[in-house]
Amino acid sequence: MSETIAIRRLGMSEAMACVDALADVLIDCVEGGASVSFMLPIARQTALAFWRHVAEGIARDERILLIAENGAGQIVGTVQLIISQPENQPHRADVAKMLVSRSARRQGIATRLMAAVDEQAQRAGKSVLVLDTVTGGEAEGLYERSGWVRVGTVPNYALMPDGTLCGTTFFHKQLSPA
Image (cartoon, rainbow, N blue to C red; front, side, top):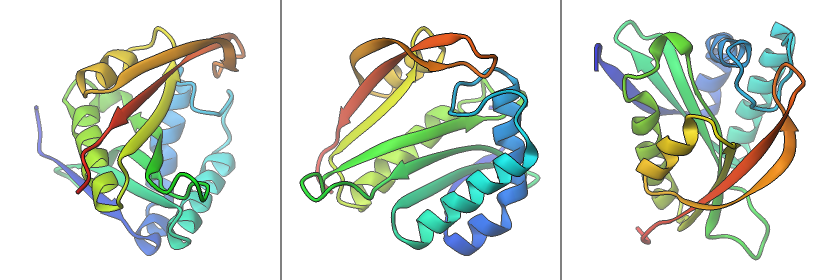
């Protein structure tokens, strides 16, 4: 890794204070082609509103937000763990919005964020994790290397930021109880 990266969990107040920096990461990733629920052109107000909503979810104990910061304290990556699940799935969580700024990729940041997800999930009493990603994208390899199991794909599941259809691959991971 070319520089020091710190992974940490944000509370609601800190998340609200970081909305601008988180919006920068989201916009960078969407402009780079990441299919993470947003279309081009992504308005800054849209990105800011999304992160405010995430912070509100943290306040309601629905989400865990992890960030990766470089040595200068700049947020260069993030991932969420959605811990609020239906009554019959108290042991499950969804992983969402794995984002690493294009300038910070290939430094092991995503791998470290995924390891932190496992740790946070276990602390929250979660033993089954689920996520989805663009079929054929680089993230599939990341998840497989991180111990995730491919479940299957759904063709034409979502749109890429430019409007073209893309398939989605679903993964799961079974964790040992904490």
